[in-house]
Image (tube, one colour):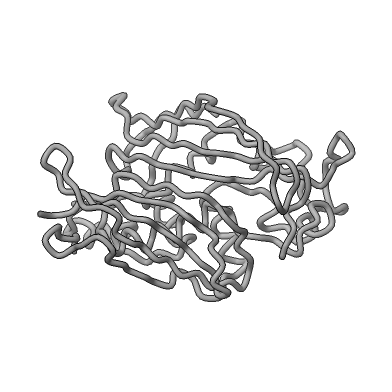
Length: 140
Length: 162
């Protein structure tokens, strides 16, 4: 169900929870699928004793991937033309993440209607973990 | 990073989608995917990052027969040189531009060029040194399919938690 230009306006928002109580096992799953086996993300002994962190933490790209899921659920499959983020804070096991997208602009490029979105992912304490933007093709 | 051959495969896409907690059938169910606008299975928007599986030099994958810096008998298998100020290399930013979305059967190449570098003083981790890299993913026809811009940061100290 792609978005329609005629049904969108600047300032519209969409929100979804993309993970509830992030598990260490999901972080391991992401390591295996992505090929990023940095022990900071899956090796409690290394993360605490060598690197000095309180525990392991999620790959930034896992947070981006979960953030992207909310966008593709909303704008439709294969509709993103741009997606970029900054990793603002670390994401830890047990975190619950909510993604919010806000319509910043509705425009056309070579006759193709597009929507520009501001994207923000926050944890259960309201702390922003991912801040970014995306552009998607929309229907007239 | 240079990846000479990144074959995009359906089972890899399925595992990647599971790992990001995305149950969308367009990532694993060929019959359901055919009925969608995508017309078949496609890869999730951040899948290109999994090209590191096909990078012979990927530093974050254990190499058979080589010491690994994660824990075994000891907390780390590789003592870091320089005495270790506790700093960490972290991912600061990632940006993708999609010329089209990836599909099983695509065979990509990826070439990476260094971009800008800059420094700033951080509030929670001391001096931060940023470096950018730009990766172009091309398909089997040589056409540009994804442009990725990545920013890495190395921190002077472990990021303080507040």
